[in-house]
Amino acid sequence: MSQALRLVLLKQIPDDPHLRQQWNALVERVSHPQVFYTYEWALAVQRAYSATLHPLLFLFYDERDALCGLAALAANVEADRVSFLCATTGDYCDFVSRPEHKPAFVAAVLAELKKQGLNNITLTNLPADSDTVAAIRRSSVPNCYRCFARTAYICAQVALAKLERQPGENKLVLPGKKMVRRSLKEMGRNAPVRLHHARSWDAVRPILPQFIESHVARFLATGRISNLVRPERRLFLEELAKLLSVPGWIALSRLMAGDNVFAWNYGFQFQGTWFWYQPTFDSDLEKLSPGFCLLTKLIEDAAEHPDVNTVDLGLGAEEYKDRFANQNRETLYLTLTVSSTQHAREILRYRAAQIVKSQARLEVAARAVVGRVAELRQSARGAGIVGGLRLMSNRLGTFLWSEKRVLFLEWSGAFVPESGTSRLQPIDLKQLASAAELYFDDQATLEYLLRCAVRLRKKTAEGFALSNSDGSFLCFVWVAAFDGYSLPELNARVEAPSADSVILDCWTPISARGHGYNERTIRLITNQLQDKGKRVWTFCAENEANSVRELENAGFQKRYSLLVRQVLGRQKIEGKTPVAMPVPATEVSSRVS
Image 1 (cartoon, one colour):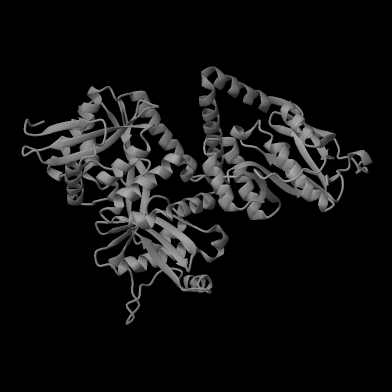
Image 2: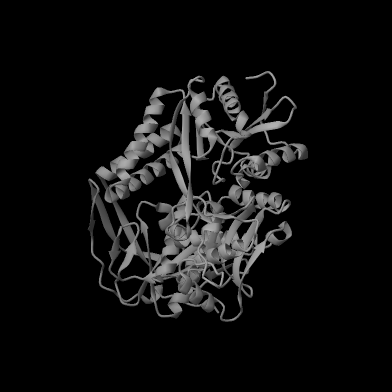
């Protein structure tokens, strides 16, 4: 490296107005400036993810001490691996520098990383058309890195100048015109539909929680957990909005009529591009395609701004994006490693994945296996090495041979009066979203909430939650017709002892257990059901002694059981549902006056 050029490494993003000015000025001079490359974006990531990411900020200065190159990287504290600092948040990540300095800058960064013993580098969402790719390939061998690059995403874009317009009317010709018109008419029955953009922090702050709740709820409705359940992701969006609102780059857009919001997009307007970054919509209005309508209106709005030339639809290969897109941009997943074995493994993994993707059935099976392995790894990580090996051994043993007895218990307890500190309320999707945010680190509860979301959509059961005075959810219960109920513990449907029987499925999050919430929830819901002349049942694995005891304390009594036996993955159920018998008089609930 020339003596006139110097590389500076910082272990944090400093709160420095002068650096901010130099940084963003450099970003604006590159051929494809992105909001993801800005000082504000890097600072927001540092503030939100400081517990897991250690910034490695490389600054390159020329002979006049002017900033001519920067790379915001990070070392993950959980692994010996370097990545882009904004890898999990930015649609595009890159080494930012003037073209004439790019080769020397990239070489200097790789040399410094190798010097520090950082032997594994993963660079995701690196634009394939960036001159950084060639610079890395040239500099990897001299620094003993083996380089492999593959396609990460194909990002759909809408070039506004390429859009067709209606002759004489100058209106854009966009897909789904008739459907959008009908949907907007339906949504605008009580008030005109309008597109609103919040661009200042004062405007964003009060509506950001509503956007987050809507996003989490939408994901639950589609059988997924939104990344916004995690507090660090919510903090990131908050910090990012604060920082980007100062230069006017944030645009939290809403499609709304009156006070009713149908769809959202947490996006940005930066250097001629409007970013479709994190959209969501109200699942109750799915049949009206509010997200599609919002994107249509946003493209029409962008076309009216002379300083906007592109709407970037970002990561993800959703079908609706292809309907709008008239160009795209490829990003790469690039790995650098000093290990020849790891390099070969990376290539083989990619080739195998390509083969699997070419066969639909094989891909479905592979995804199921990968998901199961990931689940085992997560469980094993929490249990330690010995505990993890024991867990995997138990799972294998269960697959080869296992049996468990599921008890069915009928309620015969007494009325319990309402308490002023907790109450039972019906569950809706927004409440499930709030619960997911509260119990974000409780994987079992998140899986239960996904089952709850399916029940809400299918309307096969009624859900209720016990909440305390501040609105936090402490326990959940679902009520369904017993006959034909699909029991998770049996992986099968069950027969009802009588036509008036209903069955309860209760769940208490791990951190809320041991306080009697389950018992109280059961007593409250059974009060309501017995008023309707229902016979109330529930179920529990016989070996869960604490749960059985808790159910008996709540007023349930054992009636019968079914034995579930599994051999080499095949399941067999032994036992029979008994004929309904009258409940003894001493077991009939009585109200306390």
